[in-house]
Image 1 (cartoon, one colour):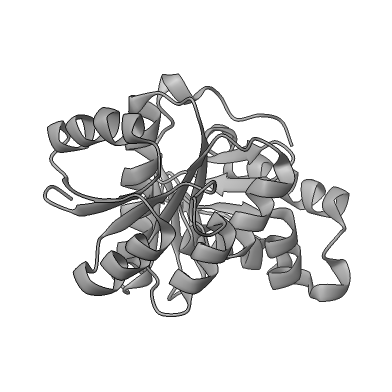
Image 2: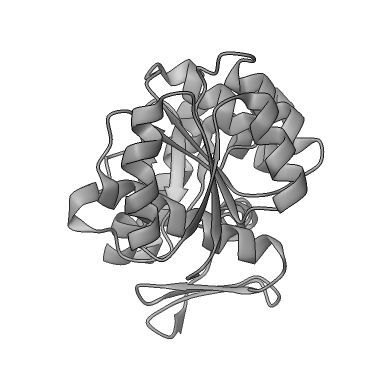
Length: 238
C-alpha cells in the first residue's frame, strides 16, 4: 500500500528521528504526534491508514488514548511500547489494537507488522471474502476450507475459530477474544480448551497450518496472511 499515511504517536524524539526515514524509505507518508491529544486530533483530521501508538505518553496513558481513538475510528493500530508484560499486550489488543511490538524492535519486523495491519484494514472494508495463504483457502461466503485445492472437513466450532482468524488475518487475537467469540463469555478463561482446538486446526491444515497459525506466548494467536519471514521465527507450539 505505497503512499499510505502512517501516524506515529510517541513522545520520544529519537523514535521519530529513527522511524520517519525508515517509513518514508518503505514508501509511506508520515505524520508525527508527540502527545495523545495531538495524535487523536490528527487521527480525526487526517484519517491515517495506520497508527503506531506508544503507551507511555506524557498527557494520557496509551490505553486510554486507544479507547478514545476506537470511539470514532477503526484505523489499524500497532502499539509500539517498551512495556513488555503480557497484561499490557492483552489489554491493548482486547481494546482494539491490531498488533503489539516491543521496544527495541527491528525495522524489518515493524514494517512487516504495518503491512499486516494495513491488509487487515482493507479486509475490514470488505475487500476480501476469501482468505488465501500458503495453499490454504478459507471461503467465508461459502463456509469452505481447502488445502491445496482439496476441501477439508471442520466441525462447526473448528470452522468458527478458523473463520474468525481468517477475518482478522495478520492481527493478534487474545485467548479471551477467541474463547468469548466462539464459545461465549463463560469460557473466557478456558485457555487449555482453546489450545486443543488450535491443535486440531494445525493438524487438519497440515504443514501450512503450523506455519500460518502463530502462537503469541501468553497472549493468543495470529493467523499469518503470508508465509512468515525468517526474522520472525517459526510459530511457537500452542
